[in-house]
Image 1: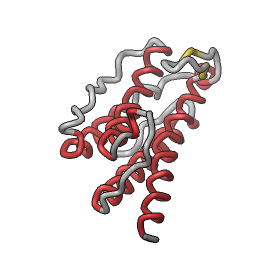
Image 2 (image 1 turned 135 degrees about the horizontal axis):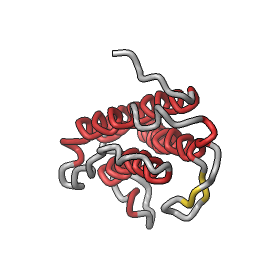
Image 3 (image 1 turned 135 degrees about the vertical axis):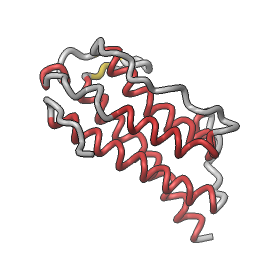
Length: 158
């Protein structure tokens, strides 16, 4: 099935990049899990273990689209809550596919100007326009994938 046409082609580009980097994160996470990589000590609850990191990244992937739809006064995109921490490893791929499918169309009919103004307050109290939130959503799994890649390389050097 061909990808949906978006009024703003930049939105479609960000959707494809989000998919690419979320899949890359999950692939790298799977390698880290198989190698029993241990994350550095931190007070960040989302970074306590590989499993909490996986849940964090997948939950955020869904929540970014839910937030954008809320701010644009669009219908809820139908993204369900993520699996529990106890189930995340076994259900991660299914949930990821669900989120990616739900990212496909909600923004298709949004005019380009709505991606740049106004700005809205994020759930972590930072101002974002919709385009900037999309960029944030693309970079989030990529940043965590990079962290895991470094840890995997360090582990190989042991």
